[in-house]
Length: 167
Ligand code: S3P
Image 1 (cartoon, rainbow, N blue to C red):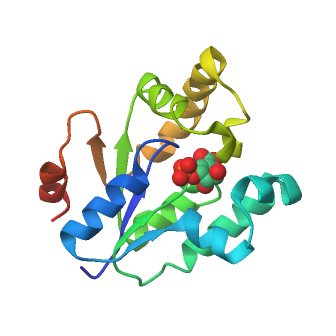
Image 2 (image 1 turned 120 degrees about the vertical axis):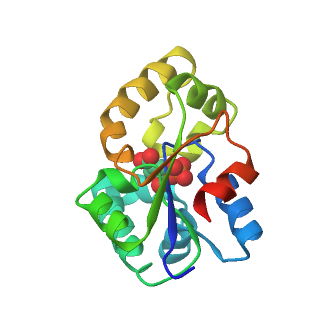
């Protein structure tokens, strides 16, 4: 593998979980961009949003993305990464971009079971308000995600199928 596979998709779409599974099956490194950002800033992403705001986070996120040039492996991006600046052009130029596609309802179910406070982009919404927010955000972000080289329907795709797709 000489170019990375970038996993893109909404928060809660399984980028980290599938990234780890794919990387271990393909015997390549797994890189989590959110994790790299946290290491760099020495605080959690919610803390960083609070202290410096989202704009500063997006700058940092782009810088960390560009540091991945030439790395091989499976790279999980943040849910917003492809949707700011010309990041999606960059991702498409520097690797294979795989979109983990879910409906808003499926994301809602998955995110409702997670700690929404760990994801400042969800603005603390829960219940029906969270669903409405996801629907709106997904509509806004879908044009970026949809440019991915490969689209995977997460509901119906097994690891074996995913491996076949990326090999
Ligand atoms: C964000 C998603 C998060 C993280 C940050 C912002 C977003 O990553 O980068 O909290 O705007 O969708 P995950 O998709 O891994 O939760």
